[in-house]
Image 1 (cartoon, rainbow, N blue to C red):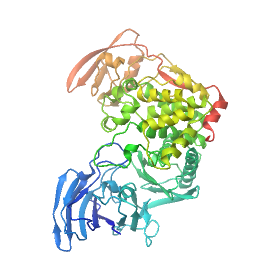
Image 2: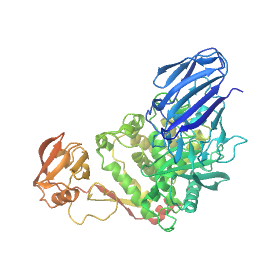
Image 3: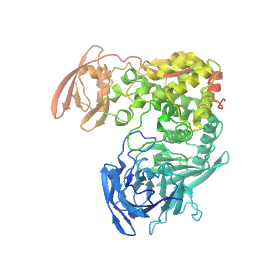
Image 4: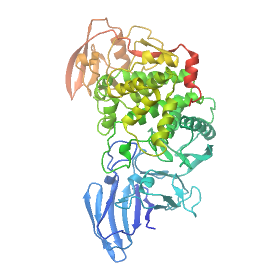
Length: 593
């Protein structure tokens, strides 16, 4: 059987270099096309991984072969129809979950950013030989299948069924702490690298509860899942995760982890980490197996467009924190506070009335993943508004005696489990068959429209009502407590420094917009008083409604004077009130099938 045999070696930690060797036998006399993906599934932006590849060469028993670069990510290889070897090096210093990283503490290796594809051999079985670096007492954690002679967590030979499986399975190398737990008879592994102290047993136990809860939504684990790995990369700064077929790679900081010395403490940072783990694990069903038909198969040399990210990322975002409250890791009050933040992030951005979530999904490549200072006015998040669409759909279904959980199981059995792929129309038709044409029509209007979602109308079906109050400042996103004094409107986001207030963005029609403030302006004074964050809010909120404040800003090193009207802030911040505990308990309790 023809094999693609890759070998990875850490050759220079100081220079962050990984050496890659690829061996195979050509299947025809035609020239061979080699290429590296330009993006990685789950992160919808072209990354151009090939920019880190250099020193490529090829040879067989007769000597050197000609390798000609064709474009930014592909090479043509001439050959003699015999076994050959390709060698190259990859620079690995990307502090993210999408690429490769190497230092003296650990290595993060995403094969999508390392391993060249051989055109025409995408379905061939793959071996990956991971060579142990000298003088380092490291281990290997990965969802790849171990070779018969490779011991658990050891360097050596690993297998993948094909190239797609290879590049969907990251590796973590280093001094690792590992905990194992069981979900429905399938071993799950929690792996941490780069950390100092952690309550590993608590983290493991609470992660197990989350996984048990999530599998209930779909009625069990995927039939082909025989292991799962949570690969946690602990750093000083950074946060995020990326889902894979039987693993997830998570980037987090030391303060996100549970403190072994404080076993009863549940910080907001740790709750966010559990939510991230919950999100990525939900993807095991929802986007790794059930996925847009456009992704069958992935074509990683260029963008692949779908309007369904609201469904696969948005609905996953709905279920991530919902799992935490259902399995008792968040209280109702904590969950409602998180929900309020999601609602207000959407409602307080003018973009909600400019872009639909279907359009946001389709244009993720150039808009959502490449946001600038105007994003608040033009780019809606298919994550956050998508999660609110799931919330509204769940409420609407429950008003008819049905649930979103049951609809998710129908979708899983219809096209997820059989790996058929979905279209947007297919999911909406499934919704129609399950709950009626009126529900499907409503869902379609939410997905393709730019109107505010009818939360006030629908949330009573979940035992909640909505109310409004003034927003005290830009970071005020939840809670029912009104400000102690009437708040003046402003709108723009800024960061404070010794030089003043740097304007980050200016929402359309806000008071800051009316005053003529622009993104990147450096606000240095308000009514001739130095603009610190404290001084700014004090001056603004003590000013008489209808008066005008004088602002001085530096704009590209020009001193500009602006006049800003003082207006009373409207009651725009939404908060939730529990009015029916029985309905809330039915929604937030055990998953209903």
